[in-house]
Length: 174
Image 1 (tube, rainbow, N blue to C red):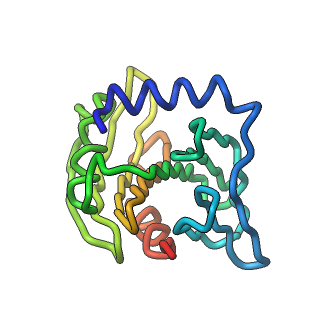
Image 2: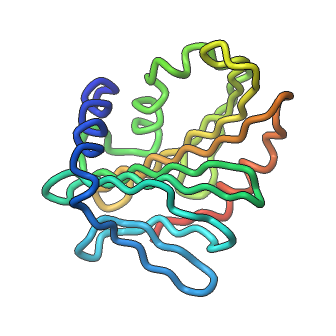
């Protein structure tokens, strides 16, 4: 799926968000995020993660979740798409990296973490803002579902990347 098409889908999803409910399953230790109907789920430790945004594509073929953690001072975004736009973790990551917001990425490194192909990088003063951001983009492709994960942390100085890597290591798809 092209970045432009994905952006259009997300914009449409924002317009229908008040009418959508997400498929979130919580236990005392974990939070599972998925499409409905028993599709694979992205699982994250419960901790203090709060879902700050949920958006669903009509027909329940894609869903977007944004979570925030005060303790970790990070944002975790998850886009799950039942799609054949890409059919491997590597191909899905390359699609995600086409986002124009990342054209000024610094110190990019590729890595493999569990089922995820990932890229870590920094954005210094994005769009002129007086801050620096650490980013981790990760993609997995499981049973016809693209899991697009974005972890970010901001500060006056470049945040340590290790916290983002550790968070990704704790995330699973099952």
